[in-house]
Image 1 (cartoon, helix red, strand yellow):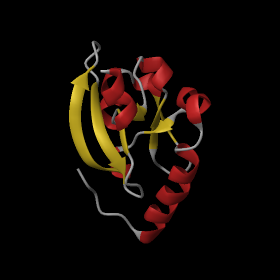
Image 2 (cartoon, rainbow, N blue to C red):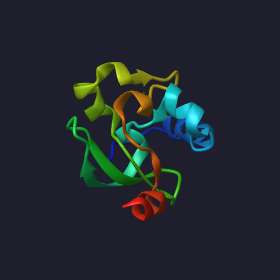
Image 3 (cartoon, rainbow, N blue to C red):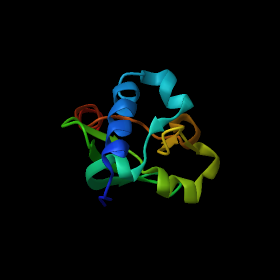
Length: 111
């Protein structure tokens, strides 16, 4: 699931991630970076009742593992939960889809 990126796109992604990973619950309501182009090592881990898949993944500029959704898939099921940022990357309002966004460790501990 990796797409080629220009250096400018990678720089924009790095800036976006610096903001997105530190904004907490308020940011989840506005939209967390959930674009497949921003992620690597994507592995499905569960399904929500509405058909949205949860994935374990890492952002391209981080080694931290997270559990969340892929915006491109969410857009096919709950399109109004997905927005495009000024940087061109898709974001998901997790509150609108009833899904958690957490680290892999948090998700695993809650299971």
